[in-house]
Image 1 (cartoon, rainbow, N blue to C red):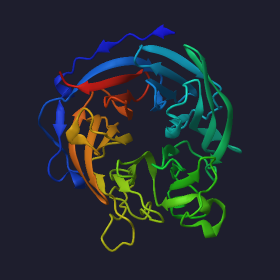
Image 2 (image 1 turned 120 degrees about the vertical axis):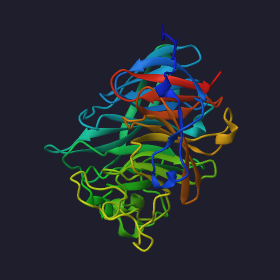
Image 3 (image 1 turned 45 degrees about the vertical axis):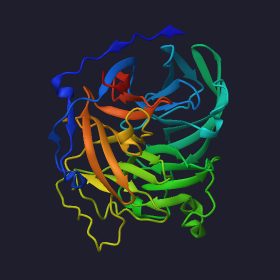
Image 4 (image 1 turned 120 degrees about the horizontal axis):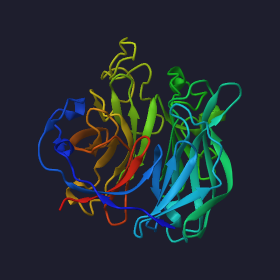
Length: 388
């Protein structure tokens, strides 16, 4: 297994902490303040990385690359390996190989034999495409190579449509380990998000084998409606449970209106009828109002933060951040980590910590340190520890 060169990154003045102002819940621009809380060390470089996940109970992190490849890093030893047995993906636009996830219940399993879940964009008839969710067995019998055996598609977006955007396809397991929650983007079509006969623009609640879970709010309608947990979503690039077992999603608005939502069974979040952003053409989309009948964002941003994935932090190394959301942000004017406190259906931005490049994903190691992955070609895996 080849070693990864580890490089300590010197933070420029542009990499200083940016703390939010008091009205961040409405998306106001933050003010500059404070000191950078992170020491940052590079742990390897990847090609258009998208999803990252630790195999539970290990110090091995798996990283998907949009073109359809996956690698892993033993962060303790600083060694890199490759993964084979991957699906054929549609690598165009926002599509490609997506999320990677492992069952928390298998934390005691050996690295070389455990269940793995992947999402990706797959081709349909004609020029159509859609997200898919697959499950297989990860087998690691060599120091620098793993393979996925028996990968099978257990869920698909329905219908497949034209275009190459807004797949979303983020995975979150319920705290009790019984269910798999999945984000399904609107595929840049808008109106399917309000259609309970399609699973686009939705958060879905599935059994671990991909079938609809019993007790979903629209199960009596049958078909894909039986998968739906909530609807009226746009492009959900984050889906996480907090430490209290409450589910939140993080999604891109159009021109403005990125939002963090407290996700509830049967709730309608309004897209494309309501948004705190506008259409890219400049056309107005009515903002959320108290009497519009839709569930409101816990927080929305204007200007946008362009969110990637996020976590709810354990508090091990930064105790004051316990159960706060740490968001990997991709906005070009100020990328980095955005920290948000939540309380049910409300939230407040607490701070922003700028990094050199856009961030796509973030995960927490068992010791409470953080790993983030930069977006795009040559994206680095960065290890964040308390500033020295």
